[in-house]
Length: 581
Image (tube, rainbow, N blue to C red; front, side, top):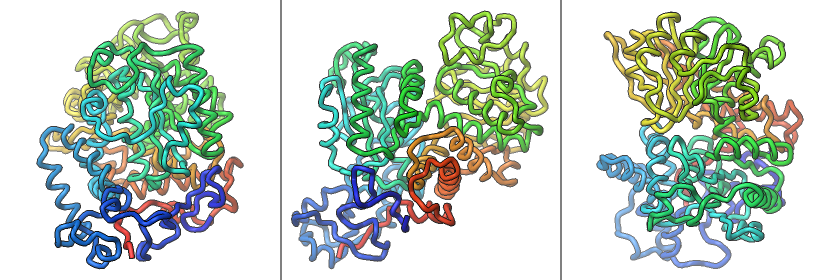
């Protein structure tokens, strides 16, 4: 590997990084040509979002690239353009309007979009990601202007490989794919779930430094069971009930093998917002033959485990000393529980089955116990412990007396005052994680957690909450945001040229994130580092993930670089404008 050459440049089939503009091998101060094989007009250049600089084209560039007269005479720096755009975005009071403005910028000036997102990450992350992206998906048909990814529907069955070749980029290293059946906590949004892959991949670039041209958002459209959408004149997907069973499986199988055939062994396929039954099945089916990662199961687990590891500094003891109670036993809940049990086994050397005993899950029918085992889905069965049946979360809290309460139910307001007060009654410092998204679905708010626990709770959520002052002390809620993990994780996988994802790589990512929390953060009750340092955090996560891939013999980019953190930082995409002379 040399500098930014993450994989072979000889063949696009194996996922090479090199592009036709030689931008990858150029230094930031080295001029490059924005032209392809034939010279286009300056008018066309301004309409290519990857190379458009708007009013930042210099006088010499305007002469060299046929732009003279096509722009007003003023030349503005990228910094001034950024200031202007932020002023404009801040004038919008409605979050969805801010989202539309950001997407509009991404479609016209890619580098300025990423410059804004990187420099203002804490302000703009809730705009392009949760919680605003949820509303954007609900209204995607109404706000849709330009396609930002590939739509593969049942109409493409039998010709998915041909469809993939319609994408303009020959080389792709990360695909985020959804079928739209379980978007956040909003349910089946069908084809309109495309907002999720688009948003996730924007974060792969902004937070993880993966070049935008290497990212491909895909929506698999097999229909929707959402009657409201089926009757919406602006709905953009197939107007039919969801295909299931053999028809669904055959489409997904064709898709998975077409991706591998077109982009090679080392393209990372991230499953996003599939319904529980399909999410677990797809991960199990393809994890041995493809480089696959499910962010809802594995990414959420890694970021929550990181929060738990860092919280031990405030709680005391080891993970094995604590009792965990989950509200929600779907992809997120069982995924987190599995990774916790795995980490405890790594620490104490005991079988994972034994380390599951202090981890309890509550689903819609109550506490998951052994007497219910026959009626449980397979992924819930490992969590069916010996205990009398209990219905209702409040009764489970009273019986189990957990030290750590984790919400992944997708249903808001489930952590009531009585439950939080109970947690505070038998814990000096209860840890409460209300992880469901968007904000309206959070199990409780930061204010409620701090107030009802009399300022003793450690609180983290899935969606952002503002700092809260209680009796003169300011608490800064943690956000267990998957954005902490998946961009750096993906970069590490790409750096190493890993051919598979291993649980050890997830544990490495969690520990790397936890290690970024400082004493200063702990003093504010924080168990996650600020997002303002996210690129540094991602580089450290990428380095640890890559190191684990090399250790496990899964890496294909040899030899291993001496300094993986430095390699990660060098490989990160920079949105600074280039000189086109």
